[in-house]
Image (tube, rainbow, N blue to C red; front, side, top):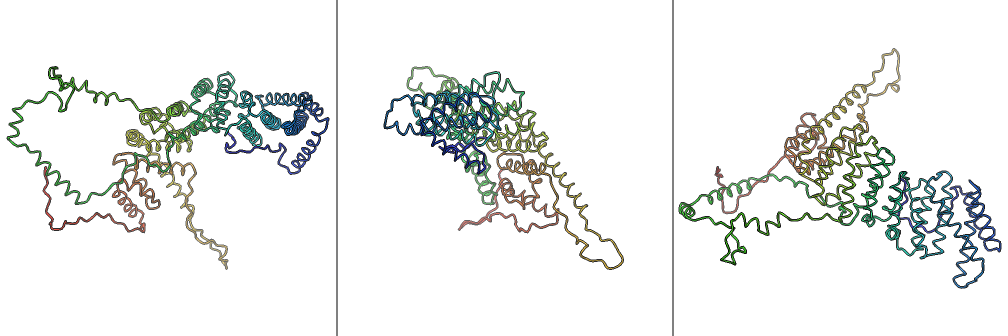
Length: 618
């Protein structure tokens, strides 16, 4: 969806002419002529006749009449407002001028409300209508707030129009409305009138014929207002759900509605309570493995030996314990201790009535951050499970992009996030068998993102799909190997034919080394995503040793070429990575050029002590 950038703050409209410099010069000269005519006594009469021409004509004649009448009325109003600040004429000319402005404003609103817009021609009429609305707002100032009920929706809907000039006109008109009505920003303007806008969008979504303007308006409202608008969208999100249920067979409409959801999720993830800093590492990242030194082994064995010595019971202590009776209540002061006459309860009964135990078992689930916004994002994310199997690849990739945005924000509340994984997992796994490479890669990225934010919770799910992931990578590797062999065979040095006589050496090409094998883009894309996915598993999930060995074996050719991959795997098991590098060297016959040995810290004997053999205690 083409949209205008909300940060633009222009207050002056550009010419509606084409980009040709001669046309712009002509329009500028015509505007100067109209400004001179506006100061004459017949200016209102000319404006009246031009406006009548607008109502009774079509095409270019209508456009010319609209432009002339608007420019005349604008120039007359600018002159009148400048003088009326100091002098009250009290004549009928001002009444006629106000009547023309109201008539032109009413026509502009009806023009903006038309459902069918001709992209090639009618956008200029729409642009003039926007300038008329801005003129009326400048005249009425704060009094124009009443008219925002009718005008604001019509202006915002053009912010997503395909023609860039009209989008810029709509943004400029919105800036004029904001300033004239006394709002600090367009966000404040939309929030102050959110009831009117939401009702207008809901009416167009609940009807049997949904127009594309309603989702477009909602999308632009969200983009202009940001996270502050989301708490007001509960009802409208329900209306979009109903529209999806009624029109789920129309792929273009479904894509448009999910574009709105994408905008809501993008802005909701920016909320202060849900924002995730880029530099904030996940809490599920596994710490780097540290090699165990001999000193630590000796210290652990000494600790076990002293613990075993303490656990040997004394004979006198055994007799004393056997002759005493065990207490029937916990070793702490309870409310029964203060009243000796009260009957003593059994320990199990006291445990049932213990307030601390009740607090632990009945502690309420803490609410999510930004509860309303979080609930909206969670509901939208849950809905994607029903449309990820859509026949439209564009919709599937759009939904996966939506998940990529919403998951980091939803992961902040674990009690809601983990059930969401159970909901989405079956339909996500099915996407790994898609024929489109970008759908498969996006799915792998989403699963990797779940591993980053859920950690060991994903272990069982990764185990269930690991065979498929491994086979996918092996098949890609075989495909690349076959291609390399075919290229190497076809790249044999050229043998010059034996011809009697003298042959110029310049025409005989020199032998060249075989070129690098070409790998098609889908294969390369999936392979790179799989490499990134396997590194994520090793870094954030407590995978089995067998799975880690598979990862090291598959990524062995890249360990020396890509230091980041090697560093990631070495956090889990540096010895396995070192061994894989040496095996790769032995298999290829090429040295990596790096002399690196596995070494251990040499323990030092404390001063005044000597080494002794450790005694094993079983």
